[in-house]
Length: 379
Image 1 (cartoon, rainbow, N blue to C red):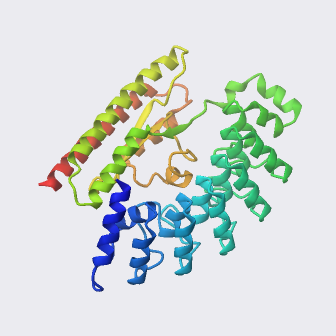
Image 2 (tube, helix red, strand yellow):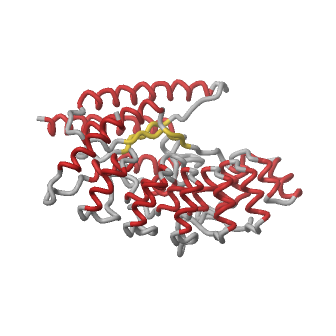
Image 3 (cartoon, rainbow, N blue to C red):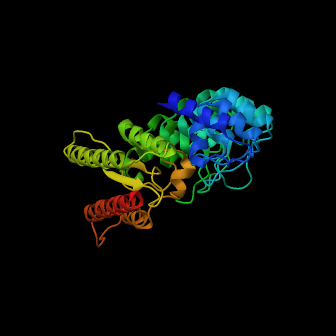
């Protein structure tokens, strides 16, 4: 499918007159993701800006870095693409490459002047490499001078992320480089608290004294329950991608949209069943389904399965995107915030079960509205 689409895009470019309009962000994004350097080079030759932004991820260079496509990256860099260009989540190409584990892409960007460290409290490439568990890239960035104690927007350090995700080798790497174990984020958590909460006791021992760990081990439940998020099942992502490609080709997406909603409903049911198993001590999966989308832009849907409410740093797409949750309907985001605030409180007026029910209803309502608008647009 992608090969056929790339050929169509190439033919369209070759036949495009000099006065033709530039590609749409969607058309452009698919061409860059597919590695269609011929089409991209033709657009650039026709005057398309090197930092033209696609429908997702960001500029062409950022997409190429995300996919580790070195030839495409060099094309953009040769045309003056800005290595520090930022997308709407304030991310840059170096972070994209680090998050996806493309060491060669990281090296190319550094060779072209990409800055390791960012001013103030911002997500850095080192944060992304550590969070995703890419040891080689973390070592590379640190060897080049990355700030090991840099803070994210919520004051989290790379060591805290390693403690949260159970990346013991990277935690040791950071500690050997002199990472500070004392800092706390805006919620009052430090690396030790993250390690205890997520039951990463080996890391907890690394970042504390024997006495402190012994005291904490006796009351481990005091550090609260862990919160995690995971990607939606692959088949959901495949349907969303097919919708996106169909839209680029000008084809209807109604049937694909129905298939998407059916898959979402199925996985919500499975998720609820797993939640019951968890309560029975049989293990389980995430218990809350969240759909993010832009109602009036077909093909922009994204599905996430979350453990309770996730405030920041969850590995769904990128940490900054989840942190911002820019696409989430305000009603759904509001309920998630309530879940987070109510968590752990005594004498709360509303139970978590009631809030989860409200969340499911809001998601269903959002899906119905989106489907209705899609039908109206198709008329």
